Image (cartoon, rainbow, N blue to C red):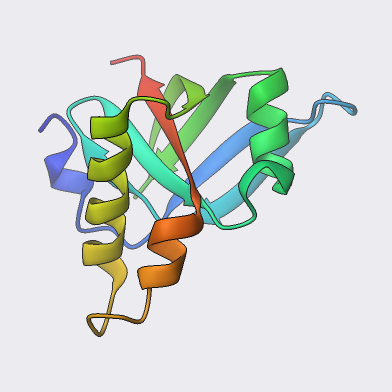
Amino acid sequence: MLLSHLEGESFCYLTTTGRVSGNPHEIEIWFASKDSTINMLAGGRETSDWVRNVRAIPDVSVRIAGEKFSGRARVVSDIAEDAWAREALVSKYSKTAEDLDNWGRTALPVAVDLDL
């Protein structure tokens, strides 16, 4: 894993470009990483503002523990990647076996392929 030294961090900070305003918008969000990809789950699915932003303008930046990366965001469509992202995020953040099950099943997986 290229980003394994950052996987223990609790949050990443995703900056998107507003699809209407053109202004940067930063959110704090849970993440899991694999190789040079950051995976996140959008609980609000397609209605999440940040998801709407990345669909319109996929170029984003991600900050983790003071390290900043640029990349390109995409909604995950690959079945295996979808399953990996859900499992990785739920297992990373779940305190009990079932506390995040619904979120893990229903949220929209989004990936950012980093320019490393």
